Image 1 (cartoon, helix red, strand yellow):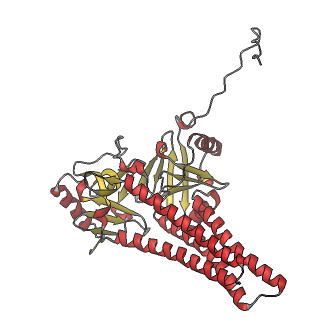
Image 2 (tube, rainbow, N blue to C red):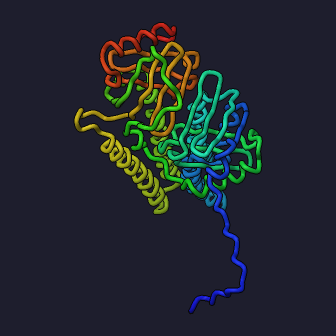
Image 3 (cartoon, rainbow, N blue to C red):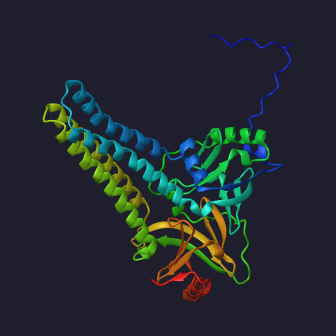
Length: 386
């Protein structure tokens, strides 16, 4: 079909300007001020669904609960139910809810270090958040996920989704520009699936920092290796969390098989057990292969070590400045609750037990700089024996 002919007497149509962050926020940042609580984090996680595995876990646990409930319903209809059958059904149904609650609790605890009063702004390139003992700057070109609900806007700048920023929509001074900004971010920043490792953080950040080091700053830059974290409290906490997660998976699998066997000896019982085992094994193998592939990509062949991340910044009398590919932060010593120093690493714990600032000895220029940094940590009064 031929295109419609152009009428030379028709007035030209005005061009439609496509909104961008530069047009919306280039001249005046979008400012906000609020107080974040654990309850707010929980509500933001639940309503924005920025962590899709919460929804996936609910769906998987729902599937797990449907089968025993179906068996129980059938038994009630034919009059073959028993207290044992009823008890097992209640147990398996309760266990299907527990993993979701555990994951939500873990995520809330992982973000306790960002609770409290906060203010800041959003400009065309980054998100700025100022709190009593920490200032964070997150780069929009590193944004991997942005989800919003009626009351909350959740942003993640890490592919692992281990750390996120939660902004109540009511905290913004200009609601009109906020709506336009959310729309632009949704269009320009496509959502990505969570990954076991953020491979972008294996590259050293090169952009100029917003903060400036003083004359007495102790600079660091380079790779942090997983092998340097052996026998630290950070690793102990992560191993304990991993064991709990695997224990929950194993417990659900065992309970699913037991309930399948208990409810009868028919073909459907055997089929149910096979389905449960097959689905769980498939999920476990899939997760294992995904983690193994990520570890392979994060290996430093020159050192034969696994890279945790690359970062740069400095230590000084006020605290630390840290920068990765996704953003930078300036943190006062008063922000941290404890510190650990080994011969290979400095570990500083935030108010959340799952949030640590980690620095390897290889990131410092020489032993003297490393010694000066460890002296600052010891003088902060945060040190624990390791």
